[in-house]
Length: 231
Picture 1 (cartoon, rainbow, N blue to C red):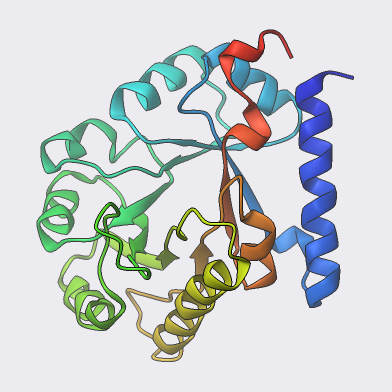
Picture 2 (picture 1 turned 90 degrees about the horizontal axis):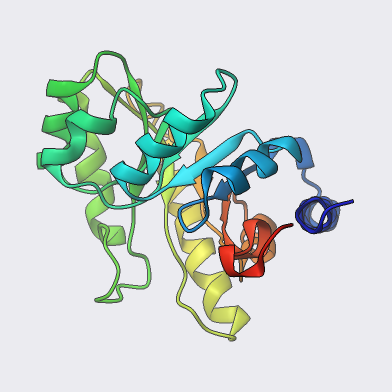
């Protein structure tokens, strides 16, 4: 059993336990392997361990991995900020965009996309200057404005919690996003069903699942780093 396979199994076990504690179905959780810092070879090992959702945050990294891997049954997630001028390079190559946070980006997606794009609206719940995204107060109006772009389907919301050991701070951020998601979902907007929550990374994915995450983005805890050598 490889080290990477052991990591995958441990994460699956922790996700199942978090779901048991909160009365959720672990099959409703999508684990995205964030492969941005590792090679295509390592990404293939992740796929071989049973994970079919991969996340990249740079257009070059995304396109390079897709060229190397070429497996039709994968789901590709773009999880980083994307410059408007780079939209044309990636928008028809991904299954989900996790970082929609401005109308100029929406306009470019509308212009470049050949199909409907599943988008998470990025929310800076903690309002940290180092993070991108809308404030909680800005989200509803922004989502309403997206109605004019028929190539965009708002499937959910995304956030990142502060990097802290204070679990209550982390929980409060995730709870706020879940509450906001619930409010938007209750409006039954055709262009924005908004049923999903992309939140939780290597250091806080268990808390995120306990607070309602449907998609967790796990990098180092799952794929490791190239410096660790062969898995």
